[in-house]
Image (cartoon, rainbow over all chains, first blue to last red; front, side, top):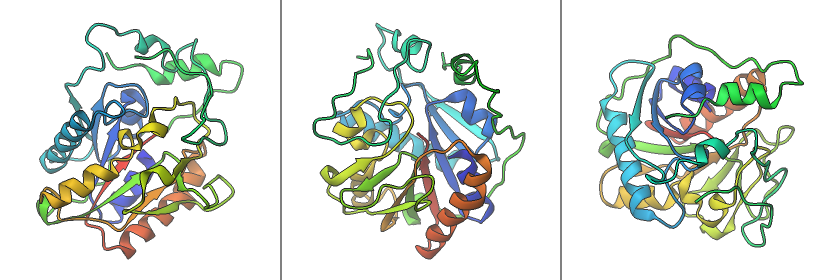
Length: 117
Length: 154
C-alpha cells in the first residue's frame, strides 16, 4: 500500500500510512508513516479493545499533522505484550502458518490459529 | 524490536528467485494545508475487505472495492491471500478503524469521514499496483474530494 500512498500523495492528497512492518515500509518510503510494533494486521491493537485502538488512531492522526518532510516515519511506543515477546518469532517466522488463502468469513472461520496471545 | 520481514521473506521463499522489494530514497509530498479537524479524511486498506454479496476484489477482478462508511461491520468479508489469523474477522477495527473514524468525526477530530472506504488485496506485482490499483484509488479519492487519506497496509 506504500506504493499507492506515494501515488495518492503525488496526486496532491496528503497521506498517512499506518504500518506494522518497519523494514518494508521504510524501503517503500511512503510520504508519512506511523509504525506500531504489533503483529501484522494489528496496527490499531487487539480485537475488542476499542480504548487501545482509539488511542493508537488518535496518536497516528496527531503524527499526520506533525510530519514536516517526506519520508518521515514515527514509531509509536506501544508494546503488544510486555511479558511475552514470543509473537515476534512466530509472526511470519519459519514456523508461521499460512492463513486465509482465498476467502475468510467471520463466522466459522476455523483455520489454524497462530500461537498468539 | 521491529521484525525484519524482508530477510524472513527471503528465508521463507529461498527456493524462488528473490522478491525485488520496492526501494525508494525519497517520497512525494503534498503538504497538509489545514488541520485534520477541517479535512475530509478517507480510509484506504489493502486488507481485501468487501461486502457480503459483492464479488471479492481479486487480482483479475475489480482493482479496488468500495464499502460504504455506514457499513454494518458484521457484513464485512475478507479476501486476502496473505497469511493472517482471525482477529480481523472478529474485530475489523484492528486494521479497518471504521467505528473509530465515525466517533472521531462526531468528536470533531476529523472534519468528515469520506463516504466510501476503499479496499483491495495486497498483490505482489508492483507494476500492477502502480498501473492499475493506484490510479483507481486516486480517481476514487478525487471523486470524493478527499483532503487527506489514511492508508492501512496489510
